[in-house]
Image (cartoon, rainbow, N blue to C red; front, side, top):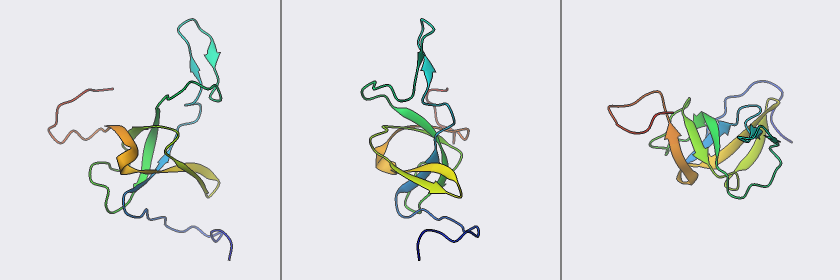
Length: 109
């Protein structure tokens, strides 16, 4: 048996894993001078934002729908039903942006 069945199946993340999706065009950006910098440009250790789609049972502080900041070096790529996703570990997340505040204070994007 190779790959997933063509029928839709639920995907459950294991342990401390997160399934995230980087928004289209997220890699490209414009410099202050107006120059377009492509996603393939080598910029060193630039962190990336992505939206969380699913979380494993051991994930404590991140929920689906949150945005997470991570290093592109700490990821695994996967394609599910023709969509590109990344798998990350909770410990590799540098910051979380969430609509739910839980009475916490912090920075707002």
